[in-house]
Amino acid sequence: MISDADYRDHDGLGLAALVARGEVTAAELIEAAMARAEAVNPQINAIVIPMHEQARTRARQALDGPFAGVPFLIKDIIQDHAGVLTTAGSRAIDYVPDAHAEVTARFLASGVVVFGKTSTPELALKGITESQRWGATRNPWDTTRTPGGSSGGAAAAVAAGIVPLAGANDGGGSIRIPAACCGLFGLRPSRGRVPLGPRIGEAWEGASSDLVVSRSVRDSAAMLDAIQGADVGAPFEIRSPERPYLDEVTREPDRLRIAFTTRSPIDTEVDPACVRAVTDTAALLQSLGHHVEQAEPGIDGLQLAQDYLTMYMGQVSADIAHWDAVAGAREADFEPDTRVLGLLGRTLPARDYVLANRRWNDYARALGRFHQRYALYLTPTLACPPVAIGALALPPWQRIAQSLLLAAGAGRLLHGSGVVEQLARDSLAKVPFTQLANLTGTPAMSVPLWSTDDGLPLGVQFIAASGREDLLFQLAGQLERARPWAQRRPAL
Picture 1 (cartoon, rainbow, N blue to C red):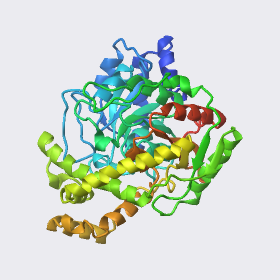
Picture 2 (cartoon, rainbow, N blue to C red):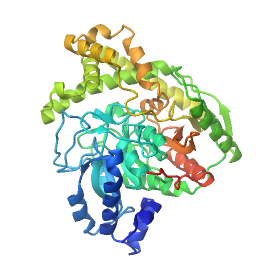
Picture 3 (cartoon, rainbow, N blue to C red):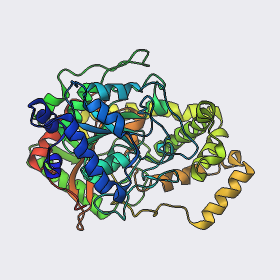
């Protein structure tokens, strides 16, 4: 058997190497993972749908792949597992798929042993993970605070040492935000890099992509090697990498021109700790030989936020209708916040939705021109340290107004009233930096290089040009060697 301490000392590739050498079996690893989950999950509420018997059966089979025998968790949205409940974090949804999502099939082909599904806010809609279906998921570094969202359960489980890496997805920051909150590495791939079929072609108009949150850069790289590439019928196929991403992690990058900013693109407040995280990282980059200067792409950040929210509203409205058709979900059973977004989406003129979507091209072109001058763009991942559980709940008077709005069905009156602009500012004030990569389809990563004075993790974000995950992995590997973080762990 492997001890709890030894289990948590290894990353995913490290555990796979132990299995390959015969020093431990997959069955022993899955028991260690489930024992760790039993010890800490009651404190953090990260795993909401256990799959213990399926995992024990799989762990006794012959497994192959770079992560053969490694315990793993998938997210309770998009990453469907045949025969296992999907709720998407909602009281309205009880759906048991009869087939794996393609991304889940590829996770399994990498050799992992899936033993549960992690929590997400309803329909993966928030940068916190507090659903009415499953309750609040808590940050292992401080259980009074959020682990972020929407892959908050995945990040909390990895930070707590339950698994070394876990499945995640990112439609507006949902890999990078929880990675930053929980002291982990998180990279969202370029649009089209990881397939989501067969049920989904492009999630959220292509804004969302899947990978993992992990303790080590090499685990994320090896998993992207394992799951990347178009599936049958995919909307388009992105160019394959020249070398395995795992090789890039140990490859020293050239001297890079890197732009940075600490200004919120929607002109909201940025906590001084988040500013210091970026300026400290800029100094570290210069010490490693890179050229760093302050610059921003010529993009209207508030307009981008509004266009993101327009997509968001339309997608929520469509999701409510989809789950009604697929699983008999009643609109009344969705959370009030979700229903308001659905109402706004249902009453949004199609013309306005299309015009907002067309502006994504303008942002992509502007960022592309920016990347002709700068290899990477450095920003805070978050505008503030992880917030307290419940801190973003609506006050009572807004709940009453929300109820009246739903009762009146008056969404059409709000379009053009300035409400959507204010909603964009309010909903993204804590996380205004991550949506740029989603709308432009570019790869971006959060790297856990910094902590607050009271020990809370803070990540910094790097955005690369489309298809340049290789460059991100090169720099991430260099930063990990310069300032290792894997042994920094919460005292849970």
